Image (tube, rainbow, N blue to C red; front, side, top):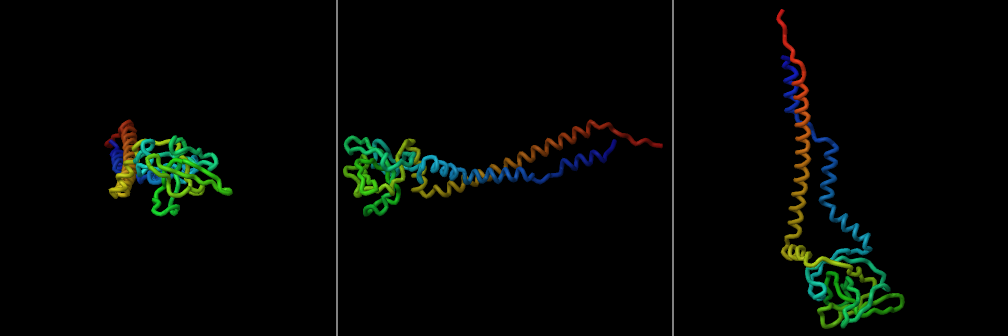
Length: 221
């Protein structure tokens, strides 16, 4: 029997080829998607809905019962003249999201989600009087159109509580880091497993081809 071919075949089985450039590129792309996918999605929503904050989470109960704390809301940009005016009694005005920082003393840092109960034009600028459905009084100052982030167009009840709880407990950033690390490890592991399977198939094919070769014997003279 020709033992040289058998030794070469066994040697090939033991050899470990480096990971191909193609799979390295795929791994890098997948890791980038894992890290930056949510940012790309958020940016896409910003463009599609024409607003800097297409998704907001309600952090107070000032709009109950129509909008509750923990609700996730979708927001779209709107022309000021198209924003629907309503009354505090009928609660039929548009619900808008706006930046109130500096408009009155003690205004929150987070955007406010309140209903429009009056609107008027001063020169070329629209102003909006807003009020929370659950509040007894309107907000302390009118909101100029430049402070409006958008109009609420829909939402998902209570799903925002996950972010609220994680943020208040200080676990949001550590959890994101852990999830990202698991994603990276999983992607790298899958790449190595695929490479091992490909190499095993090649080795099995080499072994099969070797076994099909006719055996040679040394003749004694």
